Image 1 (cartoon, rainbow, N blue to C red):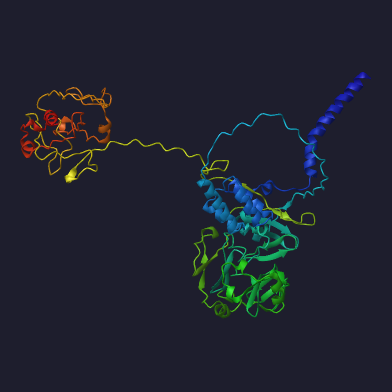
Image 2 (image 1 turned 120 degrees about the horizontal axis):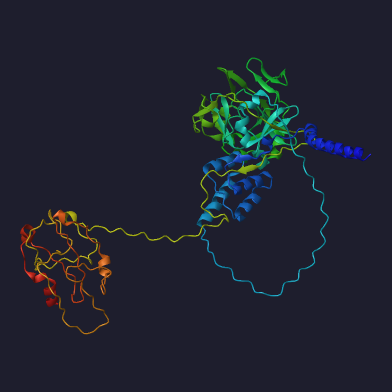
Amino acid sequence: MKNAGSQLMKNMKWIGLVASLALPLLSGYAQAPGAPEQAQAAVPVDLSPGAAEVVRLASSGVGDDVVLAYIQNSQAPFSLSADNVLYLKDVGLSPQVTSAMLSHDSALRGQAQQYAPAAPAPVGPPPVAPMAPAPAAQPPQVIAPPPAYVTSAPADVGYFYNDLSPYGTWVSLEGYGWCWQPRAVMVSRTWRPYCDGGHWVYTDAGWFWQSDYSWGWAPFHYGRWYMHPSCGWVWTPDRVWGPAWVTWRTSGDACGWAPLPPHAEFDVRLGWRFNGVSVGASFGFGLGFNAFAFVSFGDFCNRDLGHRRLPPERVTTIYNQTTIINNYQVHNNTIVNRGVPIERVSTASRVPVPRATVRDWRGGPDRMPSRSATVVYRPELKAPTRPVSMTAQKLDDRHAVIQHAPIAPVRTSQPSTLSRSGSAPIATPRQPAAAAPKASTWSSGAKPSSASQYQPAPRNSQPAPTPATPKASSWSSGAKPNSAPQNQSAPRTYQPAPRAPSAVTPVRQPEQGKQPTSSTPGYNNSRATQSTPAAKQTPSEGRNSPKYYPKGYYQSSETRSRPSADQGRSGSASSPANSPESGSKRN
């Protein structure tokens, strides 16, 4: 009996071990399909954390006033580069917000930060904390379910998936398939295609929408736009190029346009088709007044149509009085969108409308030339060279809102010069650079810059005695010597005349044959440091290197000897009238 009980316990342990190993596998098979890991990841963008926070705040729909107040009170730098400014424009951030971020960083860099130790707080009895009121009952928070994803993408999506993913989110709508929504829809609630971030240009293919966005080459010339009731504007891709896929309406002095919806197709042989059925040129495609943007003919070519469009209360009246225009044509296998007559636009604006030419570009959309007033480009679509892993959010009754992935700041540029706290860096005192000694050269008769250091010798002065061996003169070709000759014919003893004691300390002279230095006791080198020593020359060069002697206490002024012409040629001895001894006697 005992053996049977122990055997039963062993069997139970084995059963438990096998169940613990098999449970994760069974739970993995039974789990509902969730989002792939790459779909859950944030969009990596080269933005600072502060700039990414501004984009997140603007995407929440709080308005520019709140975003500007947040920027003004922020203590962290935004560190925007030129690429960052372009990316913020592409995601729909207003120019006012971007300018405020740049001005904020400029103010931080120019701010003089002073650090002072805080005074210690006086020590006193601890305050009595008041009794906290009872917390009020909070309403239950509704947590949105995590998004669901699909991975079976149509063939047309692969041509645009990688280029548009950094600027928006791919979704799957029932009845429309895969669509893309730009992040600008979340940043600006009033954003609409063919109205914000671009302007109209008349070309040989009719009215062409010139977008200001980096991604504008695709959604405004391929595919269709649709205004979803709960998600806003979304774009469905296809591969047929057009200058602008819109329908037109005119009434009096106003004109309007609206993006063509999905399933509205233009066949080069059969004309317009909607949901597979041929329709006439006056068909409205089921678009209401809220899909149109109306402006006056005089403002049609304005570059800021978003602020020029007519208010919604006028749009309703104008819409009911307009005439539909869908005059698309085909010329040389190119779809031409004539739209509103260019003559009416020129007459209303009172200026001639500039014209441009459409040219094909085969170098890829990311390498198109810069914008030109006379040329617009049509990039060639290229199929992806390698398989693309594509995912899209699935929108249904449970997931009715598009959840844009957050922006993950990736700093690859140089770090900001601001401190991490957002304040200006502490100013480091600049150390004075050590001045290199300069050689005093009086070439071509040039005079020194300071007259106090170099005094010309009296006209009646005689050159100092020189050694018997003649040496080459260093002031040939008219150049003047730097100072009195160094070599003396015989040692002399300086015996200054007795003077009354004064507050000035006598200056000791150097010993015979030694050059005075700063370490010589009693030697005052203030005058020596004011002058720049001449370039050192070796005896092998065969030149007399002039030396500068500082003024002694017994001299009334600095004197310099000017050698005579005879000495410069033959090196003969001269009168010692200009020697230090004679100078002291004169004094």
